[in-house]
Image (cartoon, rainbow, N blue to C red; front, side):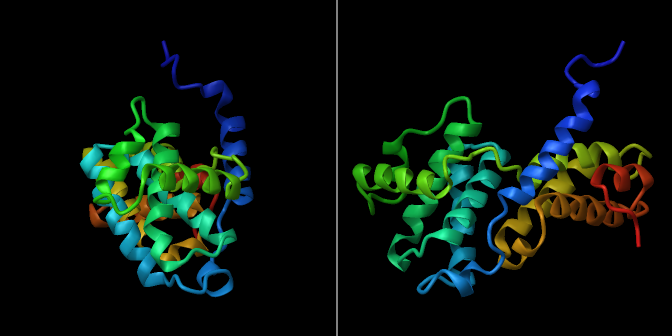
Length: 220
């Protein structure tokens, strides 16, 4: 008897929806050059590094971190943000992502505290409202983490990498969050690349047929 939670019958439709959604909701790959006047790629990297610490402090799931960074990039794609408010945008986007992904999200006051009271509760709530407006209240954008679970399962079908494949691929995937240049790639491509790198690092063939089918990208 198969796993009733695997949703095998619906998997093709689910994946079709995810692949379509990632293109519809992807951020601008050059927003630093086209939209921002005070924020650069280095500052974005520093913010993301801090958000990793915040996620660790609050013990947030990896999905929340990925969603928070995706929200930041989508907001910065359409709204010029003063340098002094960049951290506030990061806090607001993490708050939004936590409400969407977590069972028990940290409170607004906890987010205020994590900034060492740099921002007031009212400022965080106002930034949350502004971010939601910039996102057009569309919070269903898939991230690399969304695709990673499926791709790891496909990448492990031939036994390549063993039990170490999933954590190593997740680590590689999170490293990509820090890189502004990663915005040139779709989340599904980043996830597939993370599995490929992990397989190579573990001595397995890089691109097995099952992974190619799942990622919808044949080997070249």
